[in-house]
Length: 107
Image 1 (cartoon, helix red, strand yellow):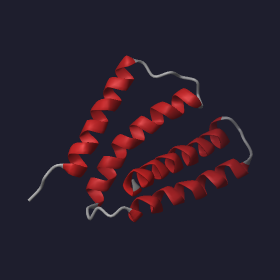
Image 2: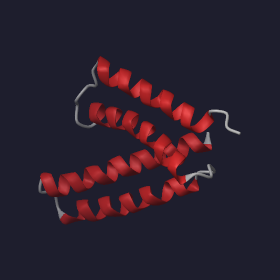
Image 3: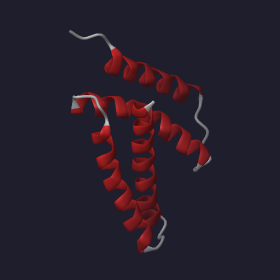
Image 4: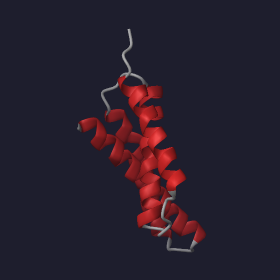
């Protein structure tokens, strides 16, 4: 559960921070949007280091799959752009890849 929580927290920090910077630059929101977004993105860089997996590459590869699912939900909930069947199929494939990367038996 801790690992899942950290993946979700990292994903929300990356998407949320990036979204605030997007709003600041692309939609001319006040500077403080960009500053808060930058702080949240720094937190995103820290959160994955709290994982107990020993390999940086595996943690970030697995996180990439989780990020894809979170991005689909963010787009659906925040941007009102509903994922289609192929988005969900692609997301499911990514989660299958996450499971292989994290839990495949290794010697």
